[in-house]
Length: 214
Ligand code: AP5
Ligand code: MG
Image (tube, rainbow, N blue to C red; front, side, top):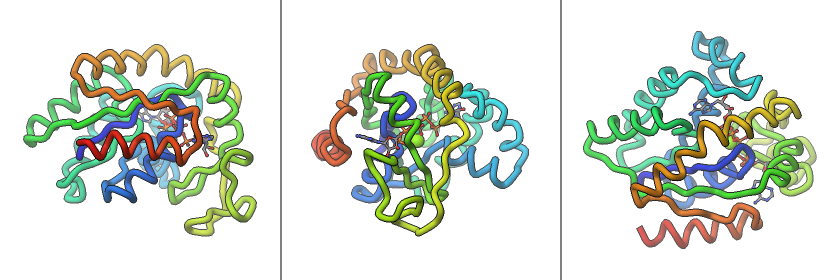
């Protein structure tokens, strides 16, 4: 199964992706996580991406297209993949179509997680992350031990772009550059809207209902 998770910052893409990836045994490909890993390792890509990400801007398309092309060629994607945070612009979506066509693959579904802006602000400002990819919230989804990851026991941290100014800009950028993808994938008959305001497990149950029909 080849899946795209779409939705604004804080919609719960990463949270649901962890569950989908485990349940359906699909590689979870988060371009945000890939970029953050490059920043941590101080690679050329990380150095270029950092200034965009800290302001809440999108990293240029050509960098992302190269990343995703290389990642989708890896062996673990042969039976399917779950994209989280890619594509984010129409040129990225067009590039993905080309990459998939070249390898005789196609998209099966685009899950679009809907949440209103007020709730997104609350979710992002209370989010705590782990380097293993797990995401928590101080109130809505706290870890068992405060500040420590349930999965790998590492210390949790707050993302640089979860500060008020960057959050505001990310929401503006999402509406301008990413939201047009909703129409793009609706026209391809691939879009499924998920109500992201529900509880985490309820949303996952709704997602399973959609995916189990594919
Ligand atoms: P990225 O890392 O993809 O961030 P994002 O899209 O802004 O989304 P988030 O990761 O912030 O939110 P999420 O939807 O994963 O929510 P989560 O599950 O954590 O991208 C970061 C940056 O990298 C971009 O701004 C850009 O600069 C760059 N970038 C990445 N990809 C790019 C691309 N393709 N092109 C160009 N640039 C790119 O949940 C949020 C919080 O809510 C958590 O605390 C969680 O515990 C809580 N929560 C989740 N679900 C629920 C629920 N149902 N109820 C209550 N709380 C919930
Ligand atoms: Mg995420």
